[in-house]
Length: 337
Image (cartoon, rainbow, N blue to C red):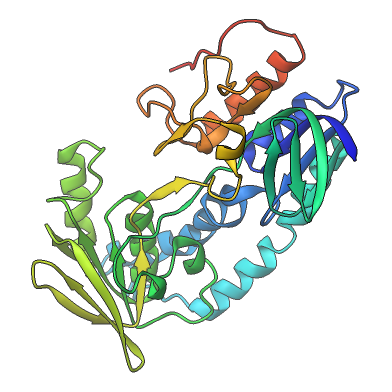
């Protein structure tokens, strides 16, 4: 059985900075990834979204300047944009893996699950770790409704080769709102269905009102106070219905009901690692209730007012844990404003 001082499960920003902090430690480190190296932010989140927003900003700006020197708005060619995006991002996972290897960390692709508090299983191989760090982040939620298997996730949107004519988002969180603006600017008819009386419930209501008005001005349609109970396939279309009687026929349905901790395949119950709906429970040193097992990044359950689930928080936790594990600090983690 291979043995390591540290095993890190997951390869997102938290892991990247943990690996960098352990570079000169002379410890054996293994980073295991079950999907694409670099994590959600690099492959299915922040970075590809920012890339697409570059084209979207041009479209929105040209619309604002109509009649002020611009005679017609810019138009996005979605197929060309996505082909450029794919070519741009294709090297990212390999580059992320090589970056960790340059930090003297071994890398392994495969789904990890706990055997005991010091052993994981990957690709039918058991590997020992003196300390194990869970850094698997979050994944898109799937609503427990009839036809949920017919819905797509935000991850899928970033791989759309052809732009659907019409798209429905279930949920009005910031992922849905951002993607709705992108797809609308590209030429799709977009509708957002929200359970509450407004989207972005965690944000200041007056600012949200301004955002909604701006999006409605661009042609995005909102439906508030609707609970989705069914998604059906009807020929080439999808039919979305709510308990309140709303029915919409569309070409594409995105479940934008939020993100959940990516822990279901880790076998945490086998070793007794405690978690709740927000993620893995840790103390002020990012250690779980099982000695020698730690967690960092978006997979951790935490107060969003103290430590929001953002890339910058994950980076901070990765840096902190590398210092703590190597004895460079004995202080508990303290999140700066």
